[in-house]
Amino acid sequence: MAKYKIAWLPGDGVGNDVMEAAKIVLDALKLDAEYIHGDIGWEIWKHEGDPFPRRTIDMMKTTDCALFGAITSKPKEEAFEELDESLKGKGFIYFSPIVRLRQEFDLHTNLRPCKAYPGNPLNFKEGIDLVIFRENTEGMYGGVEFHPIPEAVFNVLDDNHPKMKAFKKYGLENLALSTRIMSRQKCKNIVTQAFEFAKKYNRKSVTVVDKPNVLRETGGLMVRTAREVAKNYPDIPLWETNIDAQTMWLLKNPFDYDILVAENMFGDIISDLAAQLVGGLGFASSANIGDNYAVFEPTHGSAPKYAGMYKVNPIAMLLTSKLMLEWLGENTMAKRLEDSIALVIKEGKLKTYDMGGSNTSLEIAQEVAGKL
Picture 1 (tube, rainbow, N blue to C red):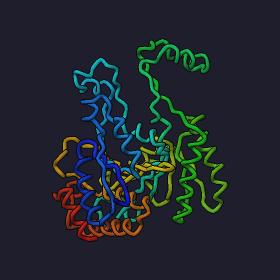
Picture 2: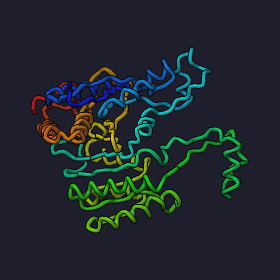
Picture 3: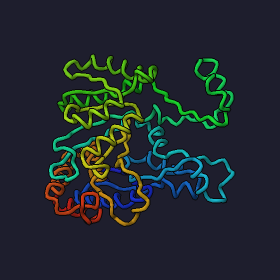
Picture 4: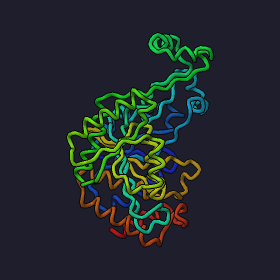
C-alpha cells in the first residue's frame, strides 16, 4: 500500500499538460503515492451539469491531499449556452468548482509564494521573495450574488440602509448585487497564519492589505482583527496598507515587503501582481490549506488555446508540487525539487515560450527530473 493517496485533478486545458509534467518529476523523486483521478471542470459541466460532481468530492475525502491543474470558468450565460441541450431547462446553474472546492473542504488559507530565482530573464528584480496569505472562503468571492435582485432581498436592504433607495429607480431587473461577507473568525485565522509563518521562517514583517477607508465595515473588521492578532507577536511589525496604494508600492519598493495578508479578492489581485514581479504566472504556485486537507494548484488559468501543445511553462506546477511535498512532511524531497528547479532556471539552457525559448512543458520537467 502506498504511503500517500493523492487526488489527481487535471481539470481543463493546459491543466492536463502541466500535471503530466508534474508526474515526471514526482516519479523521479520516487514519491510513494497512489494518484487517483477525479473529474472536475468545464467538460464535466457541459455533459453533466455539475463541474464538481459528488463522486469527485467523495473520492477526495478518501485521500491525503489533492494536486490540481487548472479549470475553465465562464459567466453564467455562456455556461448555460454550452450546456448539453438535454440538460437545459433542468435547473442546472454553473458555480465555480474551485470556489466550491475551497468551501466544501474549508480550505481557509491560500498560500502564494512569489520568489525571484536567479537567472530568470523575466524577473523584475533579483532577490524578491514575497509570500501572500489570502483568505480563501469568504469576502468578495464568497459566492453570494444576485441578478436580478429579488424583491425580498432588496426590501430588507432598503429597510436597513438609506443608500439603497438611490438604486431603486433603475428597476430590480437591472440591478446586480455581489456581497462581501467577512467573519471575525476567518479574519483572525488568516492573519494568525501569516504571523505564524513569519515567526517560523524569521520573516521581517506582516502587511495587512485592505481598503478600510471606503469599505468601512468589512475592511475595518479585517484591520481591527489584524491589530489584535499582532499583539501576540510583538517582535514582528504589522503594517497596514490600502489595496490601491499597495499595488503601487509593490512595484516601486518590492523589497520593503515580506508577508502580505488580505481577504479573498484583494489577495488574488496582489498575488498576481507579485507573480509578475518574479516572472509571471508561469512561476506562481499556490496551496489551499485547511485544518485537515489541502489542495495544491498553480495560479495560472487553463489557457484552452494551448491545450495539448505542451507549450506553457510547467515551473508553477512543479513549485506547487514542492508545496505539496512540504505539507506532506517530505521536506528533503521538497528541497531537492526546489534546488533542481532553481538550477534549471539559472543555467537557462531550456526555456518555454514565455522565457524566450521553444522548449516544451515536458522537456522542462525532464530537465528538472534529471537534476535530481
